[in-house]
Length: 239
Image (cartoon, rainbow, N blue to C red):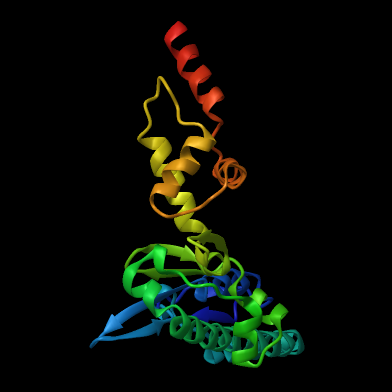
């Protein structure tokens, strides 16, 4: 029997709710920080999917035709209602978290990655009065759309700290990775830049990132070492 549907398309989902779980995942996966009338606001992007609801008229018609099935239907209606409520609660929790992140990171949303400030899940959890594990689960596999691209919310908590002129500074990990990638993309392919050379170039931009850290981020991005990049080019030429 098909007793649960989302209203806009009219397509029904199985009463056991398996399809709804997939919808729930997408329903709150993406959100957006947008500036309106000179002020930043959080948009939960409800338009991604139509509202999930229970088609009671359809259920009643099924029950009338098969009263023995009524008990099974009723149990799954309760499950569906619990699931719908859970989706709304998750959305509210994520909204609260994003509103706190917006307050802390307004300069990032205004000016871009290089303005990301140090921020911990513990700080946010204390401000929204939730456990760190609850906040971690709420932001897991969630994304935020900004004027400077779409980011995993989790990545906003990844900060690289370094010392510049005896002063401790911090910058977003995603920003450092992007700079490393750009340097490699613009390199002379016949003479690829080493991790130390990348570190030296970043230092010219006042970013003191060690060779070891450069190597770690390069590997995380799936980029080969300078020696392997050079050998790959030579192998292409020999073919």
